Image 1 (tube, rainbow, N blue to C red):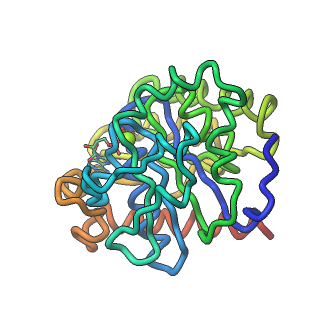
Image 2 (image 1 turned 60 degrees about the vertical axis):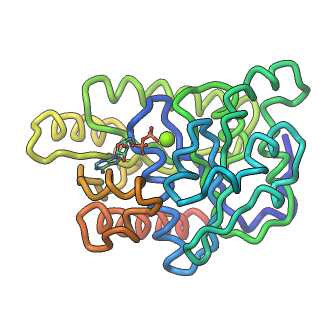
Length: 265
Ligand code: ADP
Ligand code: MG
């Protein structure tokens, strides 16, 4: 168990779901942006080889010489990988395609699950570190869950959503027992909600019935502006501040920060 030492005042939240396309990256970027907008110092760690969080924040590939891959593998310190974004208070450690080989490279390494936790165990000046996880429960996500204090789960309201999230919750429990006793489920956010679709309502009711207060009140609607924003290298909050997606992410940030205050108090 890696002692967190000087990091005590930072909160590390993994944004995880082993399913792809459920809104992890979108939630990471926009939650981070909304938190930064109210003065929180936020670092995103892009832990997905696809690098969508890096691209979505306008970080060009040629500036990604040091990435989360180098940090995980131990070739660079966390600070060396940090790039400031165009958004005040928001920085990112980008990913690179090398990351897709990291799981194999790390397999025979000592403390392979603790690489990210060790890299984060340094004096850093962030209020929040959000880790954008890849769509699997492999060694990369495991590193995020070992490094984090809490997990935020984006969930798309579709068939089998509850099965998928139950599996994730079991994994969180296992990580908690084996590596990281402080880990907790921060909350579940319903994403890409389509109010014209009855299935969305049914699944949402099921998820709330099962997870109760762990499900944030804020629901992120399906909104075309949200899906357009990444191709402009911007969070939707900068692309179109008034669209329904932006408004929802601002509310979500308010809820997350409120939950944080009650956890810390
Ligand atoms: P993940 O990181 O879980 O794979 P993403 O955040 O990349 O998921 O989202 C998957 C796709 O859905 C992306 O193209 C993204 O732009 C789009 N998307 C995410 N959230 C919304 C939303 N609320 N409305 C419309 N499109 C969305
Ligand atoms: Mg993603």
